[in-house]
Length: 292
Image (cartoon, rainbow, N blue to C red; front, side):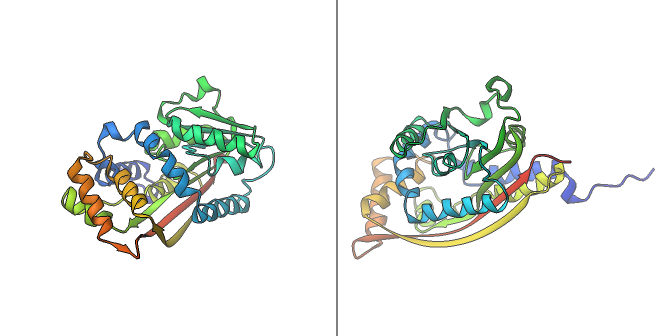
């Protein structure tokens, strides 16, 4: 009897295993477990709000909304779930177009900023929920098949097949996921070699594995890749804070480590400013959860 092996692009088990292996070898896999939870995101909250609230962040939001509109994901009266909503960069503009947005995030400080922004903007149809996505019980929350659109935009909540399947199960219409394929920010590699040693691992290209996994499961996801290069001028204190936030999950911020970061930033100032150059490739996935 001849057995025919499935083509690689139909082998979900292969893509699940490959995805998890890349994550283990990636920058995320090098984080200390005790520093990879809510405390890390609470620590980042105010900085995250400032960083994503700039012109580049606004352009990204406009682009995402345009992309959603192109795929029919911005119809009125939608029920929306935003997984890993952060400070509301996407949840708030979506709330102006939807009937209701459930904004989920594990970090109390992120949600506090979202609530403050919603109050300032007079948005009342947004429901903040503080929970970790992998711990969410869809049936207990009444969320199974309850949302027209489920989002996970640059969210750490979708990190394996189980969390991805749960995302799909929460939707009765479509899902939209975005993630980095590649990201390099000036100074990080040099400081990594100095403080930790060796080559700094890259981030996992989650979105590419998810694309293949969805296809193997029978979905027809639409994938778009975008390259972006930008340079920000930062005050020295801002640059030092960003470096400390980046290294916090990987090592103790001892006085010697802080001194090394300060020295690096001060040694790379141009007219009193630190130029932070960022090169990135992002991937955007949209798919209907209805297979037939």
